[in-house]
Image (cartoon, rainbow, N blue to C red; front, side, top):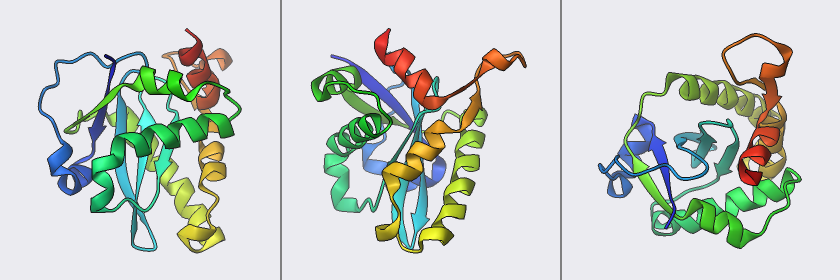
Length: 175
């Protein structure tokens, strides 16, 4: 069975202590590892999950303590819904099998992904003022904007090293 690693920030780790596993020896699965952080919109907890290799983003909104027991299905449904919104047509069962079980782990101090997430959270902060409340924020559209922004993947500075998260996740899913 596939497994997907999700490394949490220290801030999120404190909120989800029960979910955190210490067994880091497992393989990350087809999608590679993810990083998750928490942010707030009108005092409601939201999670920004970013795929390490592709920088593809998924946002879970208004996550309460009671939601943690269903966090796996919440994540899979949000990820699947975002893929569809971003024009990546796939089967839910395919997404379900690729992700498999989620392993929540302590921070891996991935500065590149953390910096990337902080930059994306600044974008979201900007849009928060535009829409006001969480209920008025078109999250799939805002996440699509994040996933559609140009990103740099690779070591060089050639134009071919620039892409967007949607293109990268599409490549990964069709491999």
